[in-house]
Image (cartoon, rainbow, N blue to C red):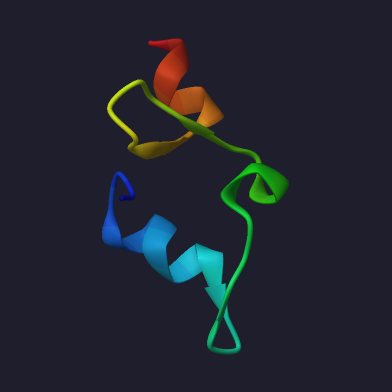
Length: 41
């Protein structure tokens, strides 16, 4: 699960899923992928 639709689209390039970690995203304990700066606040 992603924090917003933009992140979902960002991880899907050319119809394939990309590893969220390779894109600089981090996962919360609840399994939601966030941008690193989102967690800083």
